[in-house]
Image 1 (cartoon, helix red, strand yellow):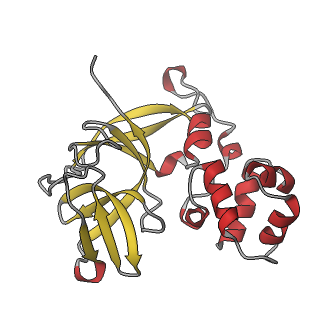
Image 2 (cartoon, helix red, strand yellow):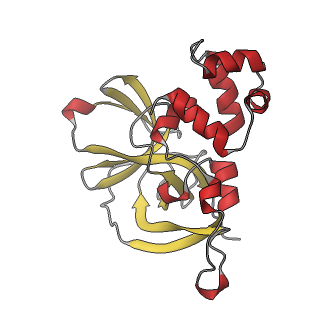
Length: 225
């Protein structure tokens, strides 16, 4: 499915008219219509408007599961009276992801599930709940962006580097959190937001043990009072 097809489904899933979508991304209806009909290429200002309005890059659409809130609108009540049409569970993995040195060995046992309102997930994260998981950070190398012991919501459907962002990657048995910048088709740069830590350039064709597990789409800082 190409980007234009994904855009069409994306707009329909939110019950928007093209004119309403154009207004949301701060462009004229005629300009957006030409892009959506394939008469004009997707421009930089279209990409910037989409990013600003929806919180993620338009290039990520083909790699995300299609978001269809209406498919979840009719559900039976779950055990204990929890309304499955309103809430969903996201697994919290028993993984301490290291954003610093490669010192952590992966433990993939699931620790628990956390409950979230579906409307909040669709509205704020623009992601299908089935694609999400949560893990905790175990280092200060991504500070101030990610605090030590922060909980990270990760979209596992984004399993390759399209745009710069914070990703969860697996290198051998180690789970890492890094900002990743794509330098070329097979070269990436691993960046720590904390300037005390260095950067690393990696040739993917020389390190096949590296796997992208997902992109961090929400940071939930937890602090004891």
